[in-house]
Amino acid sequence: MTRPSLHVRAARVLEGNWTGTSTVPSRGLYPHQWSWDSAFIAIGLRHLSPLRAQTELETLLGAQWGDGRIPHIVFNPSVPLDAYFPSPDFWRSSTAGRAAGAPRTVQTSGIVQPPVHALAAWLVHCADPGLSRARGFLTGVYPRLAAWHRYLLHRRDLGGGSLASVVHPWEQGMDNSPCWDAPLSRITPAPARSFRRADLDHGAADDRPTDLDYGRYVRLATDYRDGQYADGASEFAVEDPAFNALLIASEHALARIARELGATGTARHARAERLTAALVDRLWDPARGMFLCRDVRGGELVPERSVSGLIPLLLPGLPREIAARLVETVYSPHFGLGTSTRLVPSYDLLGEAFDPHRYWRGPAWFNTSWLVERGLRQHGEQARAQALREAVLRTAGTSDFAEYVDPYTGEGCGATGFSWTAALTLDLLHEPLAGGAPGAPGTGTGTGTDSGIGTPRSTGVPGPRDPSEVNSRTT
Image (cartoon, rainbow, N blue to C red; front, side, top):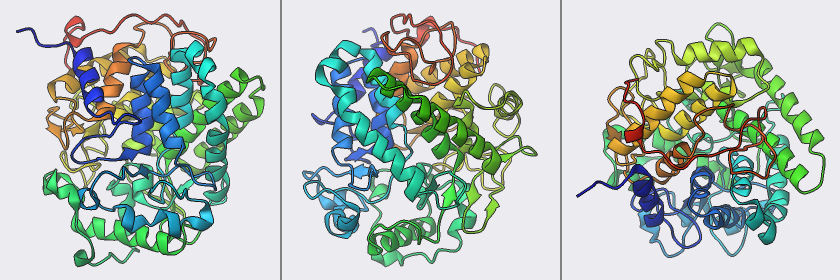
């Protein structure tokens, strides 16, 4: 019997994880809607059903708080409380979040995740502009996305340097990155007996954050909740390069959305340029050739090399010499792409904390490799981007769309049938194989390849390609 194509297999993953209004990351380990997952999922869903992609984002934005924050989890009330921790009864969003405008009719967490949403919304619109306009998709989401960005740029500028800070490691999305070790060391962990880790029911303990780290996560979340989710008091506040790079990319996308709706978008493009300058000023480390996290409470850069520090390659406004240094770092022994690793590892191969299997302390993730691939194309590295694209597609297929993989071998770790892996596989299968960088603004009326950042390029999109059609050189 012929094995189904990669496109069909990826589509089946997304169909299996669809709830009717949104997509869970995985049925077992993550049975609710996650914020940045849904943004990446929508980017892939647009190739299958632009309507479902629009619905994915609309469902998430329907749980937005009055202060503008988009919560990192929207809970499904039909899922038992003990299926995931922290559960709705921990976050108590409708009561503890009342002063911040938490919705009363849906339960959410109180923290946020990286702001990929405007970028996703623009891509989804471009997949079927006629449907988008007929439904008033952009008209509906634009004010919510604008409020989200205002929240981050004003309430979360905790360092006073124009960048947004995260107040919990879960907000940045790379939960147990070694970048958090020093800032987290100030946090007294919650007692292990005070919570039960549901994640260990679905994943090996050696692949997951340690109990000590988890105790600190719970303490931070508890204190934030007990402070009514007010910003500014947390002992943990970090300016992260990936979080801010995605905010900048989405600000460019918001400018494109504004233009589609009849405004100029000039102010948003200008803001994105100012934020890019602030990112370079506050987080660029020329000695290491990459961006680093800044511990706002400690006042210093965190000397750890993480994939987060490579994500700003996505931005078109980077000085040319900085973009060139970032490319060098991606292919240096610290990340080993093209020599020792298949995909971009989440942490420095030469770092003392490196572990090829433990969550964000070394394994490669498909969403970060997808972002680096776009960054390479953005800055003219077409051959390297194509090699990474092929490696992502090949590894997604052989790992059964794993949550993350060993960066050396491509062995799957965590959950399989993971939604953003399947979604971004679909996006790469539909990606043009020549021309300028994906993520470059075109006419806004084409085929879904315009993300609102970069320079114009061809908008012709070929049909999906299976890795069997791609040459088999190793990376």
